[in-house]
Length: 445
Image 1 (cartoon, rainbow, N blue to C red):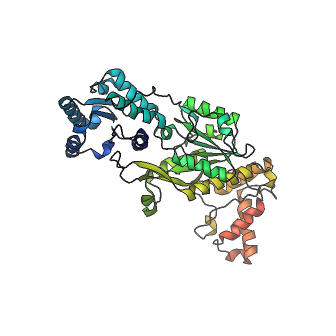
Image 2 (cartoon, rainbow, N blue to C red):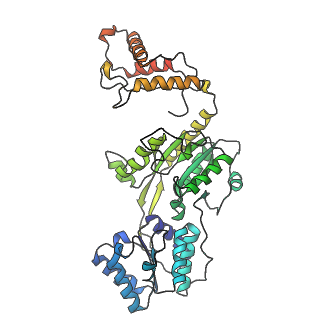
Image 3 (cartoon, rainbow, N blue to C red):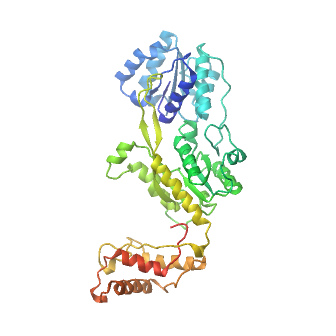
């Protein structure tokens, strides 16, 4: 079985261990078979000894033309069953025509992988074994909805079945929103660990997978779960943003519960690569999981898992690449979610807020600077909104000039300096004086 998807190959490797030894399985990534010589060697050493070859290709024949031609040639010569299907969810008749089995057989194997999930991937291997006389025929592919609930070891869970697994239904709820692709590839280990850590922190987990937050049907399902079981905090593992830079901000589907949205990252790089990089996360991860989500006002936390190549699996002769969760980072997010949930249960007047303004470089004219932004005016606007929302404020400056004057004067007074000799390097002084203006914090920074 050959595929370009790491999560699919990883899921198939796990399924192969459940299959037993009656049917031997070999897995390979098409990414490792780009050179014609590597294709020839693989055909000679592995394909020529197989009874069935199953290939998932992206973008038709052009993606792997030499490899496909060599497989077809060998399949005819050695009387090997060949199944060629697209590597996505759009059927491709031209690509499927390279198969040497009946069209309905080809489509059925494809459907097992398109639907995905641990059960379907196991049944894909069993069906392949059935085709070569090594296994009994498995059930037909089980449809996985575009969006739905997920729980470790439970097929098609419901809200009631989830609540039955919560330690205390009265505890706050944290929704975990993640991609359906992780369910399809049986790559849900980071989600499972988040569920465990939230439970240890006294928070009930509501894990919801979606095909895309921009898809109307997925958004409608998520909205229904939010209405039925309102979360106290949302942990989001999907990428990109729903908002745009232009125009007035409009609340997204994740803002429906009006609760903090914590952004986590299932990193596409390895932990070693992350640790050795001056930037930490890769450019791709930074753009998808940090920069763009800020447009929606999400609160970034940290990467909680990394993609790691495991040891060579002797049963499939492959090195599956998996999302490996980091326990300490997942615990940090779980505890942060628990604290956010507690904060959400307090009234506005009970919350303590600090507004932090930049203080670098050390010149008075650079206080609260922001390139292309009027930070002092924004600060005054925030304070006025908080006052209306019921936060306990000593007073709200009339405008940005009044705000900056008070900050400078109070900083000088606390530091015992004459106003004309003041240096704008005392960040702690500024923080202290900002907190005098605003004694209560908002749930969302």
